[in-house]
Length: 294
Image (cartoon, rainbow, N blue to C red; front, side):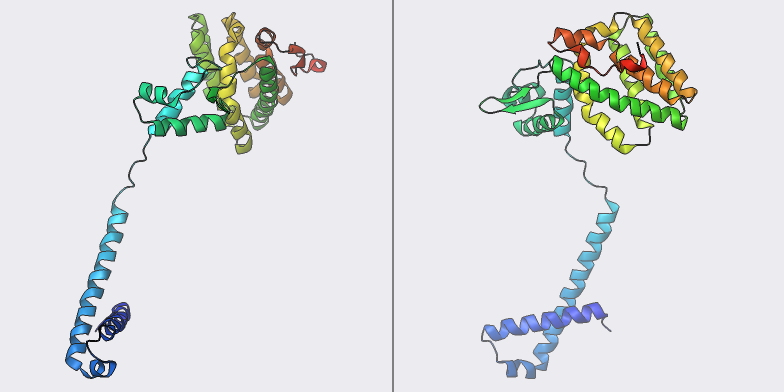
């Protein structure tokens, strides 16, 4: 007995073959319908075809469940990560033109991944596309830093206020603060900056607020570019380490206002110099003087 599925495929195959044979003029419809032998051969062929079809579908289905997806080509990701790091660290200078052919040669990839990587950098705000010039590393001036830091202050005040309100577990923050202090004692400014950023990122990640975290990461690259210009921020590294102990104490005490004010002081304590040096007005920074933060 044929299964219902095979019977269905058999009927379709019979009708299809009948149409082909009649269309070819081999026999009339009447002759074909009266030829039982031919019909039996056609039916048998339809059964074989149907069985083969269903068996192939079963094999393909089983194979699809057994095999893991093919790994995605990461050339674009690699090109993006390296170009992004080059911009943030200053190896690709602000205002410099990003030539796809030269970058592809340096990265030892084709132009395709480089082109897509540059487009991602444009979307992230690290690169500008200018008519007749192409892709240019975005320049950050004093007014831009004022804008970035005012937005950063707002986001960080919310994040640290949430951390204190929720009684965030500060064990990871204490570990990072220890790394900041150890790097400060060794006068390793790069390590201090790296651990500082990890500290702030940890607070956002633990805020349980996806919208806040997304906004923070959207500004991340441009803030890191600004930090590379803030050479005054690491003149007194021991003071930097002390600031993070104060932040942790405010969170542990669940004092929202203290945590919010402490992070604002931490962020703005050194940025005025770079704003002035790059032609901005530090008076436009949201220091919240009425709260006597300084």
